[in-house]
Length: 213
Ligand code: ADP
Image (cartoon, rainbow, N blue to C red; front, top):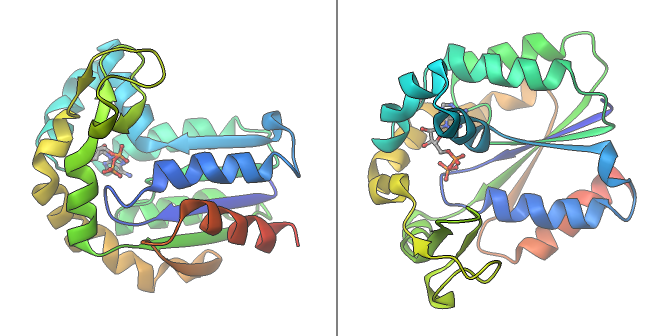
């Protein structure tokens, strides 16, 4: 891997949406197979859905808005990153604790990967408003807005993501464990702070221009 982009920010700040836009932008420079998108939230939800041993143990943390223990998430990331042969990686939702940051630093040591951490800095009132409108499709699991009525992708039923009902707890975890990392994350590479209320398209273009001027 040559480049690693870390998307940093509060729950509901739009990291997933920005990732999609970024992948679209980067596909003008790289082929789809050269990009590895890794979301710890998705990896965790997969384990829960599969009802794997790990999935069964961590379900309660996710549903109550708490962070999953570091050793579980570190293992998921280590497995995915060490088997990766893509040019560019996008990490969505990792690291979220100091231990995870140390673990990632360790994984990257000697690998010659250029890291760019992008902070989507978004006020909590904007986040709460967005999350209150966020729905997932019961069928295809894609995210959409309550204003769409049913799922715009497959017509499936719209449901509230279970952990969106505990957004206050998730924001508390973010303030306590994740936000303080912003002052340390420059240990592993460059950083870019973006206003999270601006259009995701513009943010994606800005990141793409930095990597491929
Ligand atoms: P959001 O960014 O909106 O919180 P995610 O889909 O990234 O949504 O995460 C959903 C949940 O998965 C989190 O609330 C947490 O329980 C768990 N999770 C995701 N990433 C991590 C991580 N790096 N460390 C610990 N728990 C995590």
